[in-house]
Length: 350
Image 1 (cartoon, rainbow, N blue to C red):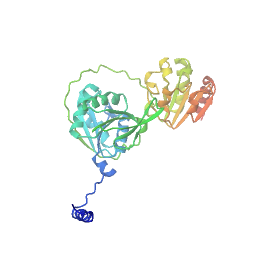
Image 2: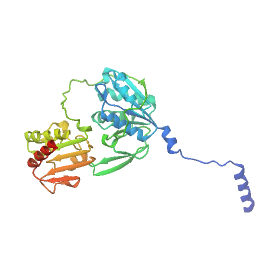
Image 3: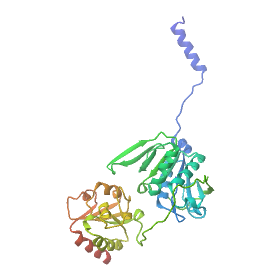
Image 4: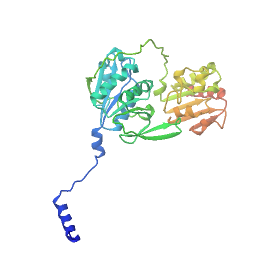
């Protein structure tokens, strides 16, 4: 048996002979260098859509290297070159192939997966548009990971913030998947410089997977007014307008006097007052203009979810207890059939 005093001396001597090993966690800057994000860019007729810039903005906020990806007909000379000018993008993968021009999810998802695996990306980000909501769930399934949808905030490389219950609650989620597949809300990620970059455009991998669906045709409503999703001013009408004729008679001149885009509540769309493409809300478009002016909209939760991020909200409603007044910065209680024409005339004269 070794005496206690001697045992302590031996332990102290052994500690001096053995080098001390310190375990250190990677710093945030070191972790950022390990991240590599693929920003999936949506294009139409060779021009990037606004959702593409939101995807890049989120990728830049995440940190690490950012690579853009775009596919379609002749994209190397058009949308890929446009993406290369975005400040912060290091490289752009481009696949020139007519088969991907319309972004059909059935073959586009397989194309993305091949490029994700080759590039060994840790994050894949796209806008929460119809394109992103169609393609990325298939990508996540093929990669055997869970998708994180419609995020509005990034806390770290694996922790994200997203609204639930029509925006009435905010959920913070953490993912342990090796590859994070994410869609981002466009109104939450807008700070991106579209000029000043000099990224390299390189060929992406094209597996040439045959499409299971065929593009037939599309009918687009053309308008001289600003696009609803990106407009700085939006004029929106609800069921209180009572008919399509009244909607057009009152809301369109008001929008023109402000140089604003036209929106509508779901109730107005379901009643046939406005086209489905003009719907603002949980099941429609999310907008965050400098000014959101609405008339005849009560303020249902589903509608508020699509416009509550607006900088200034102005509402006209004859019901002083309407929920819309709880979120409005400026409220006018009165009959919209009197107040809207009066407001339009004053704006025109001003």
